[in-house]
Amino acid sequence: MTKRVAILISGGGSNMVTLVEAMHSGRIEAIPVLVLSNIPDAGGLAKAEALGVPTAVVDHTGFKGDREAFDAAVHAALQEADPDIVCLAGFMRILTPDFISKWDGRMLNIHPSLLPKYRGLHTHQRAIEAGDKVAGCSVHLVTSELDAGPVLGQTEVEIRDNDTPDTLAARVLTEEHRLYPRVLADFVRQ
Ligand code: GAR
Image (cartoon, rainbow, N blue to C red; front, side, top):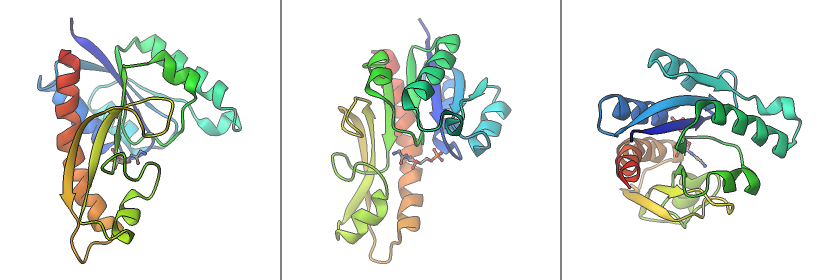
């Protein structure tokens, strides 16, 4: 049965676009049923609409720090779309363990580091400051510990002597666009 995929974003949504395009072209045997953002003017929303994917916004600012209530609203929107799999793609909110448990084994995330290195934010800056020679990206299953779930796929990216966090981020992002569709294609076949 063709799997249904919802994608959660907070920003430009370039990873979301590569996932949707791969689903539309048949490289991923799944259909995108929802793109949801916590940021009302996230650039990815217009891109999703242009690709013909239904969109939703759950603005976290309206919940005034009540993470349970925010997650409940996200969950309600997801239930309406009825996905089999949820992909976090630049979704910059920490989700509650209760929400995560509802999608146990069915929620993926892409993170811009070679996990378990550099969980959290500012991954490229931290890799450069540590003097690392390689950076990269990881797709992993989401568990209640931040960026710590089982890794499903990784790509290494060389760190050059003159790299800044921005130049490194751009090269890593290019690899993210290859890695995430490949991992999701395998995942939906399981
Ligand atoms: C990507 O680099 C993704 O790995 C990162 O945000 C960017 C989103 O770009 N995610 C995280 O840092 C999650 N902790 P996009 O909106 O263009 O896909």
